[in-house]
Length: 82
Length: 148
Picture (tube, each protein chain N blue to C red):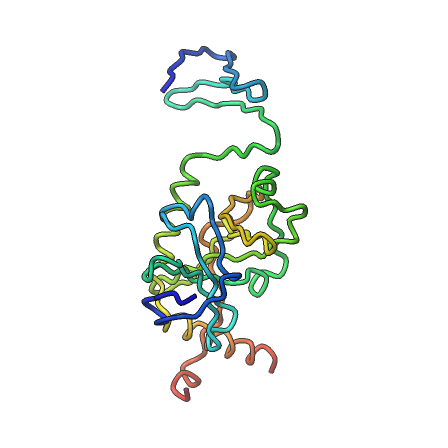
């Protein structure tokens, strides 16, 4: 991993289209300004971790539960129609 | 072709119905899946791994539950899926059933290009969607529960 020291308002450039600026430093938090082309998605690491954890939770679903779910769904729709 | 599944036994699947997820689904190594729809499960289907009998995700059509769902995907996701317009895609959301709650992941739906049969779990640009959006299903009252 490349490690660079930066001060407030300094920046790094990745390729010729991505620029990351240190916008604010306060205590243990650093605010970053990221300018990148719209086609490059930028996300917090936690989002990826959460999605992965949710995917792992998703495979615990069993078939009978989905049938129960559909039954409830139909019932509530019937109720709403009445 | 016949694929073996833990939940549904042996399932005959048309090779044209095999979906490729070149980047996989985060957390899992499998790349090939197919959609299995059971008649008694209403809007729910299964994304079953072709080469792992145990691996199947419960999925749903998001618009059944959220009529105004409007997923916006990044240009790079659009390109990697080979989509010209995002509304050409087939979209599923993953369903998670925990003991008391049922949630769907509206923030990271599965986008599938029906022509190339290529799929990807994308992270939407819309920040307002939740990874754990509860499905509001009215639970029948006690009388009805007994009657059934």
